[in-house]
Length: 388
View 1 (cartoon, rainbow, N blue to C red):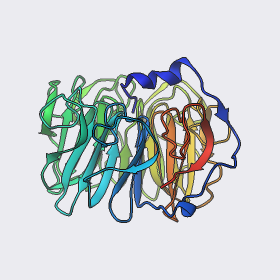
View 2 (cartoon, rainbow, N blue to C red):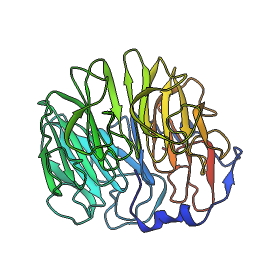
View 3 (cartoon, rainbow, N blue to C red):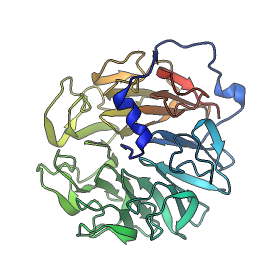
């Protein structure tokens, strides 16, 4: 999600040198001996869960989003978050990070908190993890300035900014602590985007709420909704729905991908650019075997047939295609083969988890978010090994 940190303005005012070829300094993750079971990227940082259930993070640390205490320096390769054990899930927003830890489902968050998105009752940034919900959390997702979680009892809670009703409690009041989402039961998965939220139910329905100016709620209108609203046509067999900046995507049935919302840079994947799509639309070439999807800042990445594919905005090489040309159709990321387990997108970079447990990232690297111990002058248009 689009970050608020001041140093993140850099990509908009000065382009960095783009490297389009692999170079000799890249090391493989296996050479480092590091592996991961899960990872997420957001804003200008990323985190991965190790097999020992520790959390390693890297990239931008301006507001403590890496959880390193008083050390607010960017990290160009992964470092362990102190005092955080038994990590089960991780989610990253613009400059905020949350993790579900332990078998009881404790939720801990840290980083940027100006809008209460950490959920500890304050608006103070937190440089180390703080407990938000003591137990019962199944899954968490951090958006631009708000956060949501599904609970083991089937309920869902959200907190943070609520200008457009993105918390789903029927109001537009900012909330500093978790509030139950209204009219949503049997929540299976939740996704917090830029001023809106979507969820799937155990019955396979997709529902969204919050801002709808660009058709991101998928209900066929451009009307904001302060409570969960049924996405047009997605009343069964929805496996997951993922929010982004102005575009939303869902995987349905046997792996068919549908997206809706803005198509500014071709992020709908339709072979064209421009226009709004307020209802779910099939993405050409992605009609089966899609296993994961992640839309973010004007681009989308997905995993299909164990390959990573991306499309949309590409000025910093975030599509992984070896160049900086925008794509309006799903395009295979270079150098990953059929080895992809998951793929995740952030503001201007993306990462993939491979079958070996190694991770690779690509795109903008001004804060070290690629994780290969380089930063400042080098963007990467092809995947680079994260030094886990």
